[in-house]
Length: 239
Image (tube, rainbow, N blue to C red; front, side):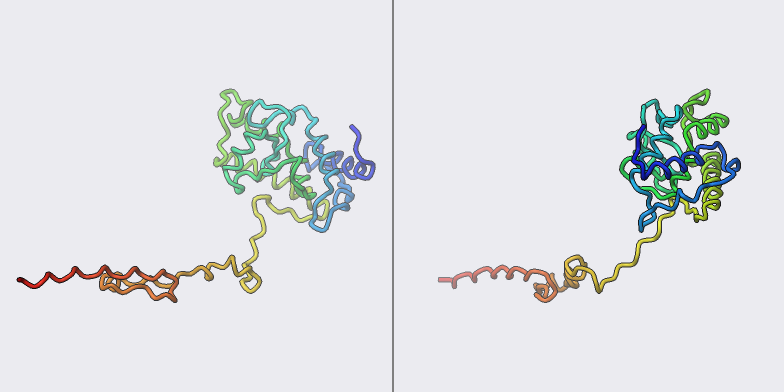
C-alpha cells in the first residue's frame, strides 16, 4: 500500500521494530519513532494509519479477538487486541480499569500506545488464553473472565513488555487506564450561570410555620404563599 512519503520512514521503522515477537529480542529501537509528535505528544494521523494498517494486515488481527467479525477497527490497549464495534462496546462496559478501548481510525495515539499494540496482537493473546482454557480458540470456547488472576497476569505481562520497549526509547510508560486527574474547578473563572449557588432557593420554612399560615419570605426564593382562605361568613342574627 502507498502512504505519504513524509510518514513512510517513521511508520516503517516503527513497524519493523515493533512487529518482533518479543521485546527481549529487540536489539535496538530507532528513536525516530518518537521524533515526530505534536505538542500533545500524539503522532500524526498518517503515521497512525500506516502503522495500524500494517498490523491489521497480519492474519490473526483480521478478525475480532472475541467473535468472528472481520476487519476490526477497535482495540483494547490493555490487552493489545483488536475488537469489532459490538465487542468494543462490551469491553467499554467493563470499565477503563479493566479494558481501555480506542479506535484505530478515530482516536489519536502516542508512541507508548503504539508500542503497546506492537508487543501485543490477537495471536499472542489467543495462545495465552487457550493454554488456560479460555477464549474463542480454546477447546470449550469458554469466555474470558476479565476479573480472573489469569487475565490480570496477561495484562501485567503486556504492560511489562511495553515498559521495556519504552525504556529503550527513553519514554515513560503509563498504564492506559490511569488517566491524569481532572483539574480542580476554579470558581473565580467559572461562568456564573453554571454555578449552583446562583440557583439556590434558600432555606425552606419550617413545617410548623406553614401550619400557622406563615409564608416563605420572598427573599428566600420561594413564591409567596397563597392568601389564607377567608373565614366563613357569620350566620345572620336570628329574627
